[in-house]
Image (cartoon, rainbow, N blue to C red; front, side):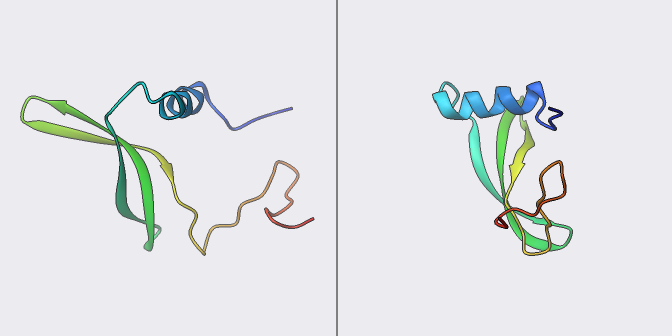
Length: 75
């Protein structure tokens, strides 16, 4: 079966699950103008910080479906 889950997604999920890194944070943000939250990795480079979004919360405007077009929560 085809999947949209990449190696990067799996790596980030495993790192969160195992607790082997301490640079994850919840980040208040907007997705398509809607209030949301993201799980991010924060990396420092000298005096600068890079915030890399890993996953974003679901917003009311999102339409989550499987590969067959079936909406989440619908049986």
